[in-house]
Length: 178
Image 1 (cartoon, rainbow, N blue to C red):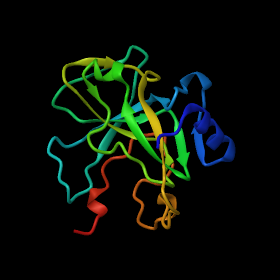
Image 2: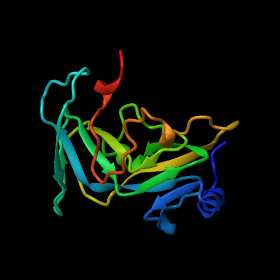
Image 3: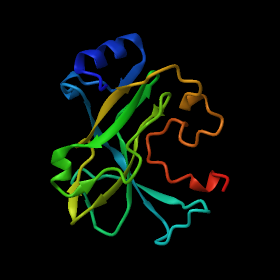
């Protein structure tokens, strides 16, 4: 079950969902709109290696916007810091963003119960497009969880993306044991 707008507000009141900053006009009937933060990152190397730490360069989006190009992966970040303590958050792109040919996540649209951070966006585009800090990019929807969660993300010792940040976070695949 997806939470309705009223239920999202109830969960915020209870403290099981936190959205900072929270703007009432961003609350839809069953979702909350999130916005592109001011940082965008690009990997330093053109060829990435899943077994090594691939470093990134962080850029600040200028007021006049920033042009994204196809055949590149950009890491963006949401303006909003979120905490989800009793539900599964899903981040989906807004249809208006999709209609500009922008994909905001390659695979990581689902969060875990206990995820507490901004959202790193895995951005790719179909054709060149100019983006701006503060533009709506996605919407969070919240699903109910059946049963009690034994191991929330923010309590896991091996959680790789739990340190609070305002900037995009590069892949930490290299920390996995495989």
